[in-house]
Every structure is written in structure tokens, then in C-alpha cells.
Length: 86
Length: 199
Ligand SMILES: [Zn+2]
Image (cartoon, rainbow over all chains, first blue to last red; front, side, top):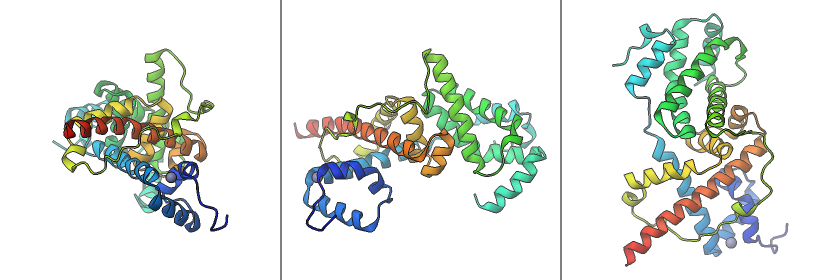
């Protein structure tokens, strides 16, 4: 790929996952960033996709086992004597 | 969890040490419960998955060879339990290694709306949280499992592949589909809010 050969929006979509996960080599990463700088549509897709992942992760982060469920779990496995919480 | 902890656990686990069973339970029950909740969508099923996962794990502890993290191994059991229950509920077959749909349409972004500028309180209130939960439920079971493990629970691609017993490239395809579908869902949701605000 030469420097004159610009990436298309389709190329961006194909590499979106790997780009977001930081799995691309530096050259491709730089080219994608250059495209995003000059292409508002791709910029919005990248930003909203990142935000989507962040929101889904955060929406769930505080879910932990209810105390009663935990007690029943330890009891089910005959480990009541190790169920120290609450 | 560092390697030393895992090594220590492995030896004691193989001796069926109750204190170590309790330790494994303590360290992994929240994440297995969350997986069940996201996969099945209700607390009763999530509790069943939780109990079944640890009963199976402790009964078959000799099959755990310590090559992967114990959490990855537990996720694998929990995913299988979840899919079995879903299959029973829906009366159809779900296979994680089923051929991927040939329709690539769901990878093309449809809605281009920049909703990232919305205030934090709009992006993370109870209504949004409920909507996200509903959106996750609309994913196919196989895509949902990949998304939960990789993006919500933070497993690596390799760990997710191990937990789902599929290739890393299959994980990436499923993850991409899940992410793009969720982006469309959230875009529709937030775009609606932005229109209301400008009225
Ligand atoms: Zn573009």
C-alpha cells in the first residue's frame, strides 16, 4: 500500500474491531487515524462504537451476587461453613 | 490472578480441598452470576446457572488441567449451561460453532448520528441502563456470549475463544456483529432523545 492509496470507508469498517482493540500495526493504524480525521461519518461510527462498548460495560459493572443467592450457593455445595459474609 | 495463586490452587483443587473450593467460589461467583443474568435475562435462571456451573466444576475438577485460568474454565461450563437452558426454553438448537450467516448487511453502519456529545447523565441514567439490557437481549445467543465475555467481562480474545470453544477469528466476527448491532440500537435510542431535546 502506497501513501497515495487512501483507505476507503469500507476499509475502515473492515478493520474497525481490530482498530478499537489496538490490534493493528502502526502503519495501518496511522492510515485509519488520518482517514477518520478527514471523514466525519467514519469518525462518528468509531466514536459511537467505542462509546457503545463503554456504556455496555459500565451498565453492568455493579452487578454482584445478592446475599441470599450467595448463601444458597454455598449451601448447595455444602460449603456453608466458608460463607463468612453477612 | 497471578500464576502463583493458580499453581497453588491447582494442587489444592486436585486434592479437593474444601477451603480452596470455597476460595474459587468466592472469587468467581459474581462473574458467573453476571454471565447467567446476561445470557438468560432473569435472576432465577441466573441462579440456576450459577449453581449448576459450580456443581459441575467441582464434580469434574480432575478435568481442569490448569492450562487456562480457572475463571475461563468456569465461564466455559457456564456458557454451555446457559445455552442448554436457552435451547430447552426455545425448543431449538443453538450451536456456538454454527456456520456464520452469509449476510454481511449487519456490518454496515446504517445510522450516522453523533450522540457522544450528550451529557453523562443522559448517557448513564436508569432508563439508558434498562435500554442497554434490552438491547443486549436482542443479540443472537452466540453473538451475545462473545460480547459478554470479551467486552463486559473483559476476557482476551484467546480466553473468549477457549470459553466458547471456537476459533479466535470466529470470536472476532461474532464480537463485531454484536458491537455493530448494539451501536445501531443505542444510536436509535439516543437519536430519539436528541430530537426530543431540539423540539
Ligand atoms: Zn470514511
